[in-house]
Image (cartoon, rainbow, N blue to C red):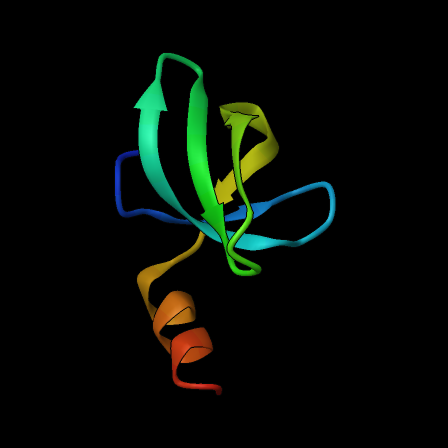
Length: 59
C-alpha cells in the first residue's frame, strides 16, 4: 500500500512522481513534470529510497 510522500513510478511509461493523497485503491500523484493526476495503485510501483535519492541528486 502507498502512503503520502512515497516516490512512485508509473509502470506503463516510467514517469516518476510523489504521492500526495491516497483514497482506497487510487493515489493522487504529483508528477515530475508538475502534472497532477489520480492513478490506480496497481499502475504504480514504489521507488526504493536509495533510487529516489540518487534521482534527486542526478546520479
